[in-house]
Image (tube, rainbow, N blue to C red; front, side):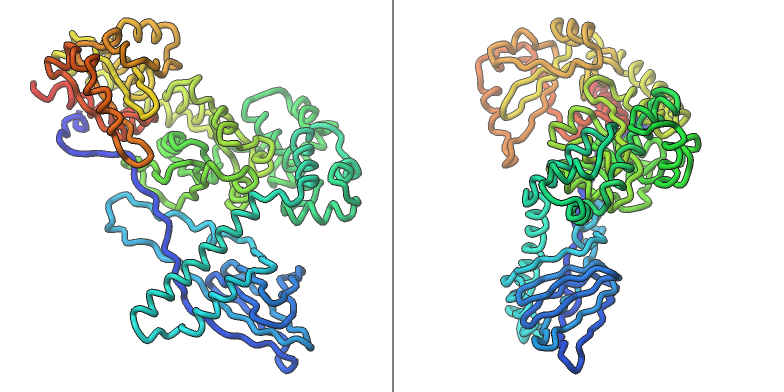
Length: 557
């Protein structure tokens, strides 16, 4: 039990994820006139073009953007474009080349640099009229060679203000509802993909002509209506194949195809393989909704390509070196924005906790257009079943059972050690103090380790709930006056800070007569635990909590 022999050494499964730093590589002033009407741009870094004056066009492959004074275009790296001036209105533009750099790794071990959603995207962003950005670009050009450090600092502020304005503009694009009728038609398509749907019907919902509808649809989604419908059906078929729901013919009928042969043809067009050859074991680009599922995937030898989370922390699983940069997607983003980022990352499968999809306002129908979704219930299953379910989905069952077998050995040895400590004969209470509530924990989180892995005794009422609900029993909210009804011989206390980082709300509990008169408090048999070490519920954390618990209960032996 070498891992459990380590004491007084802080081991954390959590590490920060930091965004890269934006830097201005260079800025240039460009004139396109009747003598030099064309100017080619193809930079290895991202480029921002601001139109100071004149008129013209910017050509990207077969697409043309009309440029006027105040227009701003953001180009991904390695995007060849041609600026073409209007013969009567010469173009004057500023070209800003933007780079990013990772922060020094010496901040502390385990830090991961997140991808910049702006510079890592392959999408061209066009803003028809942003005079403030153009003005800032002009200021940067005029002072591109600062004469003193004050001007240098001002340049940095101006540059980052430009980046901020662009990011805000992109956010507004994702959240704006400029085309509600078109979006309603897409929602209809996502909810009725298994039915017979015509472009005429979709155009009618959107209130536009059929030809115009196809143009608008592709501008908004990047796909034609038929391509989008095919993605929805094929990805739903993948979900049914994973769950083993019926024969190929039954699956074809469920997703809206007339027979298995038509499904096979569409499936092969989209994936390059027939449904019978759909190999989940070869999946490489998987996205996880909920940070704990990142742990499960890492333990199974598959690093997630994207993590949808509301935290900037990521799981640093000891022994699993990250081979690529995971993309972090803010779970509070709109469904359209999340879908767009998943599409850009070529995600092949999304693993999600059912209730959390809706709690974050994410729509299954929209995300299915990006990739098939396998829902792994969060509260309905314990962490071991989470691991087994995810392993089954990606066909790595053997890895899961091997890890669980190793964990069981450690678990038994840990229980044996703790059962020889005074805690073995005590009632252990896990009290969690949050700004908005007072909770007594049950069979999940730290309770899983204390009551299930180590076999220690919970308060009577908690024991009854565990026997009744098992892994699904999370906690009971109580009033301060009910403390004595749940307080055992030893109390483990976990404080959650408020949004400002304060734990003063816990003082209300500690200064109360209800707390001070508890026998465990009077005997000084109380342990304050760090919430970040004891709350996460995933394989990596549970094993580390087991180690911490052994140290906690055997410290004076």
